[in-house]
Image (cartoon, rainbow, N blue to C red):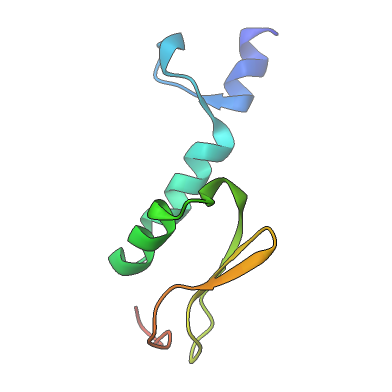
Amino acid sequence: MKCSQKCRLYNFDNNLNNLKPKTDTDLQLLIDVFPERIRGFILSHEKLDELLEVVLDIGRQPEARFLGKNQILDVGEVPRKI
């Protein structure tokens, strides 16, 4: 695979030992914007690699959807402003 192809598939800091799949870094960017209590739950979940989506509908409990299972992230409802 040429370097230009690797650059599209991976994020790296000019050190080939620090290659990370782009999907991992994109997922981390998404998780970083969540409130701390939700972020902590997601990052500590044993099936993080099976995460499909995180649902933050106003007025409902936040939910993470994994392959074959949904998990409520917090007992409180999602407010208009987080």
